[in-house]
Length: 189
Image 1: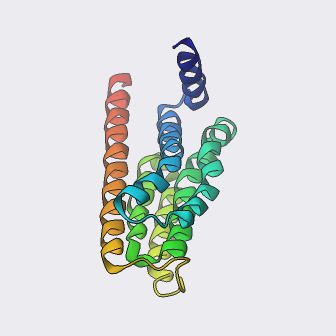
Image 2: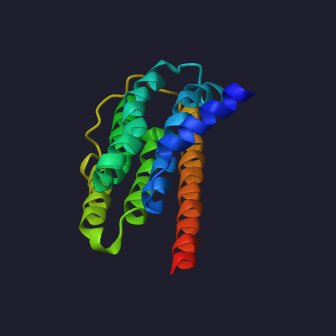
């Protein structure tokens, strides 16, 4: 049990930052990264036993894991890395699974993260990142080509439900983190 506590303390120290907005962003990045290894299992249980394409989503894991390290040195860059990694992962996933999988719905929490974790003086960065999410959705429509594996209609429906639930859960999580930030900011002033 002490080993688990030690690991938890190390992760918490890695995510910690003096700026609560950066610390919150770091937390979201690490939660996303820690959930990625389970995605093949979710797809196996909810969609199909053809899970090999899901392993390509792990290409983005190092970027999510790097957010706290980058943010420690370059706060804005680290915070921008989180939605950029999410947008990149979403584009890759749409290419791998096809838009019928509904994976593009993850662009919503990417845009929310961009809107949430930048201060008023940093709005230009937020708008550029929100625009990148919108551009990915509108600009890549019909340009993904053939997915690596074509699932059946019922499997794509299950995929869409899985991705909708996952993106919805991430959106709620970001909202809860944001409400905690608002409370913390009000308490400090």
